[in-house]
Length: 246
Image (tube, rainbow, N blue to C red; front, side, top):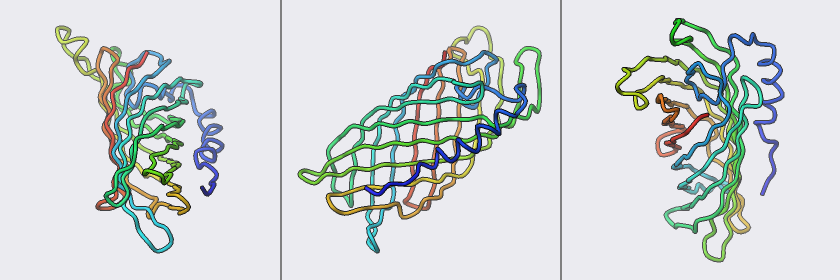
C-alpha cells in the first residue's frame, strides 16, 4: 500500500499553536460536540454507523466501492479545546457489486475548537448562541477480504468546519429527555483512500467534498449526530451516531 504523510499531523502542527494562543474564554471543550452545556467535558463514548459510496481508480479504470462501518469511539479532552479519540469496529466492503467479508477496523482522530464567537449570552445557559470555527481529522484502516484475495485499505480525512450552536432550557417535566442544545455545521473535507486489492493498488477518484451535519444534545448527556460528506452524485459518505458524555 502506498504511504502518505497523514494530513492530520500537518493540521495538528499548524492549529495547536494557534488554538493555544486563543483566549481561553472563547474556547469550549470539543467533547461537547458542537453543543456547549456549561459543564466541563471529560470523556466521550460514541457508537457510529457509516455508509460509504465512493469511486476508486486503478490507472484509468474506475471501481465503485461501497462500505459499511460500525465503529465504537472513546475520546478524552487533553486540552480545553482539543479532544483525542481512538476507534475500533467492523467494516465490510463491496467492489463493483461483489461483497467482501467483514473485517476489523482501527483508527484514531482529533477534534479541535479553534475560535468561538458568542452571539448571545444568558445568565442561565451561558453561551446561548455561538458561532464556532474548528477542525477534525481522522485516520482509519481495515480489511475486508474477497475470498482468497486480500483487500486492505487506509483512509485519512481532514475537515475544517464552521458551526452555529444554540443552547435551550427545556421544560422541567421533560427532563432528562428534553434537548439541551442543537447545532448545525458545514465545511470542506479532504478525504484520501489507499487500498490494495490483491496486487492491484487503488486510490480515491475524488478527494474533496462538502460537509454538512447536525448535533442534538439531551439533558441526560446523550447526543445524536447526523453527517454527510458529498463528493458528487453517487460519491457520498453518510453517518449517524449516538454518544454519551461525562
